[in-house]
Amino acid sequence: MKTILITGAAGDVGTHLRRELAGQYVLRVSDLRSLKKINREEKFVRADISRFADALRITKGVDAIVHLGGYSVEGPWEGILSANIIGCYNVFEAARRNGVKRILFPTSNHATGFYRRDQTIDHRVYPRPDSRYGVSKVFGEALASLYADKYGMEMFCMRIGNVNPVPIDKRRLSLLFTPRDLAQLVSIGIEHPAIRFEIVYGVSKNKRSWYDNSNAYRLGYKPLDDSEVFAADILRREPPGDATAELYQGGMFTVAEEIPNPAPLPRKARVKKRK
Ligand code: 15L
Image (cartoon, rainbow, N blue to C red; front, side, top):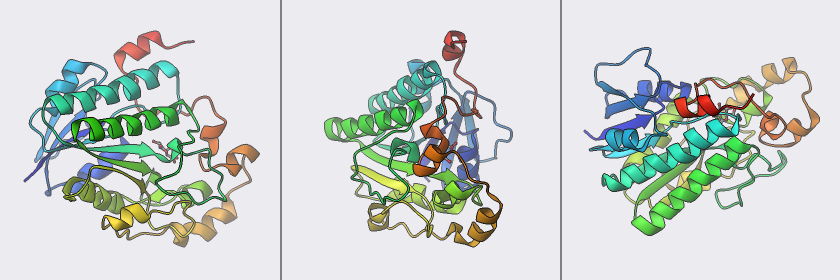
């Protein structure tokens, strides 16, 4: 069985993924926080990926890395810089030094959030980040490209929509990524023999999708879920939102300076956080 490192394992996406992948891989799970529950076949390693020594320690001896760790919404620059720019560099560079070839990088719909909702975009479009957070995801994609071209690493970038069993609002009707579709795409990222550098969209087969996800389909992705069954109900109860946010795929990320963050900042960033 392959050993897979999942960073940021305590977060929502990590929690769904660990449940879905249980039994298929040996999971080394890491986070800054403690995990609520550690399954029998998982090994927990605490790490602050903004410290290179931690990144080196946790990436040693694994077959692939799903790098979920980092700040997952728009927030203060210090937090984004430390967790998503420095943290991402540390994990990729530590993987390279430890001879780990394959990294799955969950980038985000916010790397392209300033495309309008009436546009359909594919994996080749120019990034249009909608936030500092989105910029950090574009950085991760660029770093993945560098590590593929320069060091021959195998980099699978998934621009994730919204991981949830059901869509939570109108915008997420276009972005729903159910846990079982997430697990299928991640398994492709781990197992596909011919990954060099790929960008795919991490979304289910939603009728209202803004994405041409043909690159994921080419690699064998066959999503099972479609948010449309929830559409009538959601559209009936949702009041009109901010006009700018409604125009763009990134929604509130295009206007807000901060979105409540479900994860704590790394220690260093906490100290420097501006008032
Ligand atoms: C993301 O990239 C975030 O990580 C997640 O928390 C959601 O906000 C999601 O995008 C979204 O756009 O719904």
